Length: 388
Image (cartoon, rainbow, N blue to C red):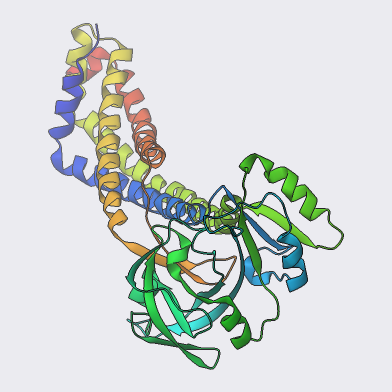
Protein backbone atom coordinates (compact mmCIF):
# COMPACT_ATOMS: atom_id res chain seq x y z
CA UNK A 1 0.00 0.00 0.00
CA UNK A 2 1.48 3.33 -1.12
CA UNK A 3 0.83 6.79 0.29
CA UNK A 4 -1.31 8.74 -2.24
CA UNK A 5 0.54 11.37 -4.28
CA UNK A 6 -2.07 13.93 -3.24
CA UNK A 7 -0.77 13.65 0.33
CA UNK A 8 2.70 14.86 -0.74
CA UNK A 9 1.23 17.60 -2.95
CA UNK A 10 -1.01 18.90 -0.16
CA UNK A 11 1.84 18.80 2.36
CA UNK A 12 3.96 21.04 0.11
CA UNK A 13 1.32 23.77 0.08
CA UNK A 14 0.69 23.69 3.83
CA UNK A 15 4.09 25.42 4.11
CA UNK A 16 3.54 28.07 1.45
CA UNK A 17 6.26 30.50 2.56
CA UNK A 18 9.09 27.99 2.87
CA UNK A 19 8.00 26.26 -0.33
CA UNK A 20 8.01 29.53 -2.26
CA UNK A 21 11.40 30.58 -0.88
CA UNK A 22 12.99 27.21 -1.63
CA UNK A 23 11.45 27.01 -5.10
CA UNK A 24 12.62 30.59 -5.80
CA UNK A 25 16.22 29.58 -5.11
CA UNK A 26 15.91 26.69 -7.53
CA UNK A 27 14.19 28.94 -10.08
CA UNK A 28 17.19 31.29 -9.97
CA UNK A 29 19.58 28.42 -10.70
CA UNK A 30 17.42 27.18 -13.57
CA UNK A 31 17.09 30.71 -14.96
CA UNK A 32 20.88 31.19 -15.04
CA UNK A 33 21.48 27.78 -16.60
CA UNK A 34 18.73 28.19 -19.20
CA UNK A 35 19.77 31.77 -20.05
CA UNK A 36 23.40 30.87 -20.76
CA UNK A 37 22.37 27.74 -22.68
CA UNK A 38 19.93 29.81 -24.75
CA UNK A 39 22.69 32.35 -25.37
CA UNK A 40 25.06 29.67 -26.69
CA UNK A 41 22.29 28.10 -28.76
CA UNK A 42 21.32 31.49 -30.22
CA UNK A 43 24.91 32.22 -31.17
CA UNK A 44 25.36 28.86 -32.87
CA UNK A 45 22.00 29.08 -34.63
CA UNK A 46 22.78 32.55 -35.95
CA UNK A 47 26.13 31.58 -37.43
CA UNK A 48 25.15 28.14 -38.73
CA UNK A 49 22.08 29.54 -40.48
CA UNK A 50 24.31 32.19 -42.05
CA UNK A 51 25.61 29.51 -44.40
CA UNK A 52 24.08 27.21 -46.98
CA UNK A 53 25.07 23.56 -47.41
CA UNK A 54 25.02 23.96 -51.19
CA UNK A 55 27.67 26.69 -51.05
CA UNK A 56 31.41 26.18 -50.72
CA UNK A 57 33.71 28.75 -49.11
CA UNK A 58 37.35 28.98 -50.09
CA UNK A 59 39.89 30.74 -47.85
CA UNK A 60 43.64 30.67 -47.40
CA UNK A 61 44.93 27.46 -45.87
CA UNK A 62 45.45 27.88 -42.12
CA UNK A 63 43.24 30.98 -41.85
CA UNK A 64 40.67 30.75 -39.05
CA UNK A 65 38.36 33.36 -40.58
CA UNK A 66 37.93 35.56 -43.63
CA UNK A 67 39.70 38.39 -41.80
CA UNK A 68 42.94 36.38 -41.80
CA UNK A 69 42.56 35.08 -45.35
CA UNK A 70 43.82 36.31 -48.71
CA UNK A 71 43.28 34.98 -52.20
CA UNK A 72 45.10 36.49 -55.17
CA UNK A 73 43.32 37.37 -58.40
CA UNK A 74 45.24 34.63 -60.20
CA UNK A 75 44.08 32.04 -57.68
CA UNK A 76 40.49 33.27 -57.97
CA UNK A 77 40.69 32.89 -61.75
CA UNK A 78 41.82 29.27 -61.35
CA UNK A 79 38.86 28.54 -59.06
CA UNK A 80 36.50 29.94 -61.70
CA UNK A 81 37.55 27.07 -63.94
CA UNK A 82 36.04 24.41 -61.67
CA UNK A 83 33.40 22.45 -63.63
CA UNK A 84 31.20 21.78 -60.54
CA UNK A 85 30.24 25.45 -60.13
CA UNK A 86 26.50 25.92 -60.66
CA UNK A 87 25.17 28.18 -63.39
CA UNK A 88 22.61 30.87 -62.65
CA UNK A 89 19.51 31.88 -64.59
CA UNK A 90 21.50 34.51 -66.46
CA UNK A 91 23.89 31.87 -67.73
CA UNK A 92 26.79 33.01 -65.54
CA UNK A 93 28.54 31.09 -62.78
CA UNK A 94 27.08 31.32 -59.28
CA UNK A 95 30.40 32.44 -57.85
CA UNK A 96 31.35 35.53 -55.85
CA UNK A 97 34.79 36.93 -55.06
CA UNK A 98 34.56 38.91 -51.85
CA UNK A 99 36.69 40.95 -49.50
CA UNK A 100 36.03 41.38 -45.78
CA UNK A 101 37.51 44.09 -43.54
CA UNK A 102 36.76 45.41 -40.07
CA UNK A 103 36.11 49.04 -39.20
CA UNK A 104 35.19 50.75 -35.94
CA UNK A 105 31.86 52.57 -35.83
CA UNK A 106 30.06 54.47 -33.04
CA UNK A 107 26.87 53.04 -31.58
CA UNK A 108 23.71 55.13 -31.63
CA UNK A 109 22.90 54.76 -27.94
CA UNK A 110 26.33 55.07 -26.31
CA UNK A 111 28.64 56.54 -28.93
CA UNK A 112 31.17 53.83 -28.11
CA UNK A 113 33.15 52.32 -30.96
CA UNK A 114 32.62 48.72 -31.97
CA UNK A 115 33.99 46.61 -34.81
CA UNK A 116 31.71 46.10 -37.81
CA UNK A 117 32.19 43.77 -40.78
CA UNK A 118 32.41 45.50 -44.16
CA UNK A 119 31.93 42.97 -46.96
CA UNK A 120 32.76 43.70 -50.56
CA UNK A 121 30.31 41.74 -52.68
CA UNK A 122 30.22 40.68 -56.31
CA UNK A 123 27.35 40.50 -58.76
CA UNK A 124 26.28 37.03 -57.61
CA UNK A 125 26.67 37.50 -53.84
CA UNK A 126 22.95 38.07 -53.30
CA UNK A 127 22.01 35.10 -55.49
CA UNK A 128 24.19 32.88 -53.31
CA UNK A 129 22.37 34.05 -50.17
CA UNK A 130 18.61 33.60 -50.71
CA UNK A 131 18.00 34.35 -47.02
CA UNK A 132 18.98 37.99 -47.64
CA UNK A 133 16.09 40.26 -48.61
CA UNK A 134 16.05 43.99 -49.36
CA UNK A 135 13.50 45.56 -46.99
CA UNK A 136 14.05 49.26 -47.72
CA UNK A 137 15.67 51.37 -50.42
CA UNK A 138 17.43 49.84 -53.42
CA UNK A 139 20.54 47.94 -54.40
CA UNK A 140 23.77 49.95 -54.73
CA UNK A 141 25.01 50.78 -58.22
CA UNK A 142 28.27 49.03 -59.18
CA UNK A 143 31.33 51.25 -59.20
CA UNK A 144 29.91 53.76 -56.67
CA UNK A 145 30.31 54.41 -52.95
CA UNK A 146 26.76 53.26 -52.26
CA UNK A 147 26.31 50.51 -49.69
CA UNK A 148 23.75 48.19 -48.11
CA UNK A 149 23.40 47.97 -44.33
CA UNK A 150 22.13 44.96 -42.44
CA UNK A 151 19.03 45.46 -40.32
CA UNK A 152 21.03 45.20 -37.11
CA UNK A 153 23.58 47.77 -38.32
CA UNK A 154 20.85 50.24 -39.31
CA UNK A 155 19.27 49.97 -35.89
CA UNK A 156 22.35 50.06 -33.68
CA UNK A 157 25.03 52.16 -35.40
CA UNK A 158 25.24 55.89 -36.12
CA UNK A 159 24.95 56.58 -39.84
CA UNK A 160 23.65 53.09 -40.63
CA UNK A 161 20.08 54.12 -41.46
CA UNK A 162 18.59 54.50 -44.92
CA UNK A 163 19.88 57.66 -46.61
CA UNK A 164 22.57 58.20 -43.96
CA UNK A 165 26.32 58.07 -44.42
CA UNK A 166 28.98 55.86 -42.89
CA UNK A 167 32.55 57.12 -42.97
CA UNK A 168 35.41 54.68 -43.30
CA UNK A 169 38.51 54.27 -45.48
CA UNK A 170 38.68 58.08 -45.78
CA UNK A 171 35.40 58.20 -47.71
CA UNK A 172 31.71 58.80 -47.07
CA UNK A 173 29.55 55.86 -48.07
CA UNK A 174 25.80 56.38 -48.55
CA UNK A 175 23.38 53.75 -47.28
CA UNK A 176 20.93 53.28 -50.17
CA UNK A 177 19.35 50.06 -48.94
CA UNK A 178 18.59 48.03 -45.81
CA UNK A 179 18.58 44.25 -45.98
CA UNK A 180 17.21 41.63 -43.62
CA UNK A 181 19.08 38.34 -43.42
CA UNK A 182 16.87 36.90 -40.68
CA UNK A 183 18.59 35.36 -37.67
CA UNK A 184 21.98 35.19 -39.39
CA UNK A 185 25.33 36.94 -39.03
CA UNK A 186 24.82 38.81 -42.31
CA UNK A 187 22.36 41.15 -40.55
CA UNK A 188 25.36 42.55 -38.64
CA UNK A 189 27.32 43.44 -41.80
CA UNK A 190 27.65 46.30 -44.29
CA UNK A 191 27.86 45.37 -47.99
CA UNK A 192 29.33 47.34 -50.87
CA UNK A 193 30.92 46.93 -54.29
CA UNK A 194 33.98 44.68 -53.95
CA UNK A 195 36.13 46.65 -56.41
CA UNK A 196 35.38 49.98 -54.74
CA UNK A 197 36.13 48.60 -51.28
CA UNK A 198 39.35 46.93 -52.39
CA UNK A 199 40.49 50.22 -53.88
CA UNK A 200 39.45 52.23 -50.81
CA UNK A 201 41.19 49.89 -48.36
CA UNK A 202 44.14 49.31 -50.70
CA UNK A 203 43.53 45.58 -50.67
CA UNK A 204 44.91 43.92 -53.83
CA UNK A 205 43.57 40.48 -52.85
CA UNK A 206 40.24 38.88 -52.03
CA UNK A 207 39.58 37.27 -48.66
CA UNK A 208 37.23 34.54 -49.86
CA UNK A 209 35.59 32.98 -52.87
CA UNK A 210 32.09 31.52 -52.53
CA UNK A 211 30.35 29.39 -55.12
CA UNK A 212 27.33 27.10 -55.34
CA UNK A 213 27.84 23.47 -56.26
CA UNK A 214 25.86 22.16 -59.21
CA UNK A 215 25.82 18.80 -57.39
CA UNK A 216 26.33 18.94 -53.63
CA UNK A 217 27.50 15.32 -53.57
CA UNK A 218 30.58 16.41 -55.54
CA UNK A 219 31.87 18.54 -52.67
CA UNK A 220 34.63 16.16 -51.54
CA UNK A 221 35.84 15.81 -55.12
CA UNK A 222 36.04 19.59 -55.56
CA UNK A 223 37.73 20.07 -52.20
CA UNK A 224 40.35 17.43 -52.94
CA UNK A 225 41.16 18.91 -56.35
CA UNK A 226 41.53 22.49 -55.06
CA UNK A 227 43.43 21.65 -51.89
CA UNK A 228 45.95 19.47 -53.74
CA UNK A 229 46.51 21.93 -56.60
CA UNK A 230 50.17 23.07 -56.27
CA UNK A 231 49.24 26.50 -57.63
CA UNK A 232 46.87 27.11 -54.72
CA UNK A 233 47.39 27.31 -50.96
CA UNK A 234 43.70 27.22 -50.19
CA UNK A 235 41.18 25.13 -48.29
CA UNK A 236 37.53 24.47 -49.07
CA UNK A 237 34.68 24.14 -46.59
CA UNK A 238 30.94 23.90 -46.81
CA UNK A 239 29.49 27.27 -45.89
CA UNK A 240 27.50 25.78 -42.99
CA UNK A 241 30.63 24.11 -41.62
CA UNK A 242 32.65 27.29 -42.03
CA UNK A 243 30.24 29.43 -40.00
CA UNK A 244 29.66 26.71 -37.40
CA UNK A 245 33.38 26.85 -36.62
CA UNK A 246 33.07 30.60 -36.09
CA UNK A 247 30.71 30.00 -33.14
CA UNK A 248 32.55 27.05 -31.62
CA UNK A 249 34.84 28.90 -29.19
CA UNK A 250 32.24 31.34 -27.88
CA UNK A 251 29.48 28.73 -27.58
CA UNK A 252 31.78 26.36 -25.70
CA UNK A 253 32.78 29.16 -23.32
CA UNK A 254 29.14 30.02 -22.61
CA UNK A 255 28.20 26.40 -21.96
CA UNK A 256 31.13 25.86 -19.61
CA UNK A 257 30.25 29.10 -17.81
CA UNK A 258 26.60 28.06 -17.55
CA UNK A 259 27.46 24.64 -16.16
CA UNK A 260 29.95 26.10 -13.65
CA UNK A 261 27.52 28.71 -12.35
CA UNK A 262 24.75 26.13 -12.15
CA UNK A 263 26.88 23.82 -10.01
CA UNK A 264 27.90 26.68 -7.69
CA UNK A 265 24.41 28.14 -7.32
CA UNK A 266 22.78 24.73 -7.04
CA UNK A 267 24.70 24.02 -3.83
CA UNK A 268 22.84 26.87 -2.16
CA UNK A 269 19.52 25.68 -3.61
CA UNK A 270 20.14 22.11 -2.40
CA UNK A 271 20.97 23.33 1.11
CA UNK A 272 17.77 25.38 1.07
CA UNK A 273 15.73 22.35 0.02
CA UNK A 274 17.42 20.25 2.69
CA UNK A 275 16.60 22.78 5.43
CA UNK A 276 13.00 22.97 4.24
CA UNK A 277 12.56 19.20 4.26
CA UNK A 278 14.30 18.74 7.64
CA UNK A 279 11.89 21.33 9.03
CA UNK A 280 8.97 19.42 7.50
CA UNK A 281 10.15 16.19 9.11
CA UNK A 282 10.64 17.85 12.52
CA UNK A 283 7.14 19.35 12.46
CA UNK A 284 5.44 16.11 11.40
CA UNK A 285 6.98 13.47 13.69
CA UNK A 286 3.61 12.49 15.08
CA UNK A 287 2.12 12.33 11.59
CA UNK A 288 4.95 10.04 10.49
CA UNK A 289 4.29 7.79 13.49
CA UNK A 290 0.59 7.64 12.64
CA UNK A 291 1.37 6.67 9.02
CA UNK A 292 3.66 3.89 10.22
CA UNK A 293 1.00 2.70 12.67
CA UNK A 294 -1.52 2.55 9.79
CA UNK A 295 0.73 0.08 8.00
CA UNK A 296 2.79 2.25 5.69
CA UNK A 297 6.36 0.98 5.49
CA UNK A 298 9.67 2.81 5.59
CA UNK A 299 9.80 2.82 1.79
CA UNK A 300 6.40 4.53 1.63
CA UNK A 301 7.52 7.26 4.02
CA UNK A 302 10.75 7.73 2.05
CA UNK A 303 8.86 7.99 -1.25
CA UNK A 304 6.31 10.45 0.19
CA UNK A 305 8.93 12.90 1.48
CA UNK A 306 11.05 12.55 -1.66
CA UNK A 307 7.94 13.32 -3.71
CA UNK A 308 7.49 16.56 -1.76
CA UNK A 309 11.07 17.58 -2.45
CA UNK A 310 10.71 16.70 -6.15
CA UNK A 311 7.51 18.75 -6.40
CA UNK A 312 9.32 21.77 -4.97
CA UNK A 313 12.15 21.24 -7.46
CA UNK A 314 9.71 20.94 -10.35
CA UNK A 315 7.89 24.11 -9.30
CA UNK A 316 11.20 25.98 -9.17
CA UNK A 317 12.28 24.55 -12.51
CA UNK A 318 9.05 25.53 -14.26
CA UNK A 319 9.20 29.04 -12.77
CA UNK A 320 12.84 29.55 -13.81
CA UNK A 321 12.20 28.21 -17.31
CA UNK A 322 9.10 30.39 -17.68
CA UNK A 323 11.09 33.51 -16.82
CA UNK A 324 13.98 32.49 -19.09
CA UNK A 325 11.59 32.03 -22.03
CA UNK A 326 10.97 35.80 -22.10
CA UNK A 327 14.63 36.34 -22.98
CA UNK A 328 13.73 35.29 -26.52
CA UNK A 329 12.17 38.71 -26.94
CA UNK A 330 15.56 40.41 -26.60
CA UNK A 331 18.42 40.83 -29.06
CA UNK A 332 21.94 40.90 -27.64
CA UNK A 333 25.31 41.56 -29.21
CA UNK A 334 28.70 40.13 -28.43
CA UNK A 335 32.19 39.95 -29.85
CA UNK A 336 32.76 37.19 -32.36
CA UNK A 337 36.06 35.71 -31.16
CA UNK A 338 36.99 34.60 -34.68
CA UNK A 339 36.46 37.88 -36.56
CA UNK A 340 36.61 40.30 -33.60
CA UNK A 341 33.48 42.00 -34.91
CA UNK A 342 30.19 42.63 -33.14
CA UNK A 343 27.49 40.05 -33.77
CA UNK A 344 23.83 40.49 -32.87
CA UNK A 345 21.67 37.46 -32.08
CA UNK A 346 18.72 36.36 -29.95
CA UNK A 347 18.32 33.89 -27.09
CA UNK A 348 17.02 30.56 -28.42
CA UNK A 349 15.04 28.11 -26.28
CA UNK A 350 14.97 24.53 -27.54
CA UNK A 351 13.24 21.40 -26.17
CA UNK A 352 16.67 20.04 -25.22
CA UNK A 353 17.46 23.12 -23.11
CA UNK A 354 14.01 22.96 -21.46
CA UNK A 355 14.51 19.28 -20.62
CA UNK A 356 18.01 19.83 -19.19
CA UNK A 357 16.79 22.79 -17.11
CA UNK A 358 13.88 20.84 -15.61
CA UNK A 359 16.12 17.82 -15.04
CA UNK A 360 18.57 20.03 -13.11
CA UNK A 361 15.71 21.37 -10.96
CA UNK A 362 14.34 17.90 -10.19
CA UNK A 363 17.86 16.66 -9.43
CA UNK A 364 18.33 19.52 -6.92
CA UNK A 365 15.05 18.55 -5.28
CA UNK A 366 16.08 14.90 -5.15
CA UNK A 367 19.50 15.59 -3.62
CA UNK A 368 18.14 18.17 -1.19
CA UNK A 369 15.33 15.92 0.01
CA UNK A 370 17.14 12.60 0.20
CA UNK A 371 18.70 12.90 3.68
CA UNK A 372 15.56 14.34 5.36
CA UNK A 373 13.45 11.62 3.70
CA UNK A 374 15.82 8.92 4.96
CA UNK A 375 15.60 10.38 8.45
CA UNK A 376 11.80 10.32 8.30
CA UNK A 377 11.72 6.73 7.04
CA UNK A 378 14.02 5.46 9.82
CA UNK A 379 11.95 6.86 12.72
CA UNK A 380 10.79 4.38 15.34
CA UNK A 381 6.99 4.09 15.41
CA UNK A 382 6.64 4.24 19.22
CA UNK A 383 9.06 7.13 19.63
CA UNK A 384 7.40 9.05 16.79
CA UNK A 385 3.92 8.62 18.31
CA UNK A 386 5.21 9.62 21.74
CA UNK A 387 6.95 12.73 20.35
CA UNK A 388 3.83 13.67 18.42
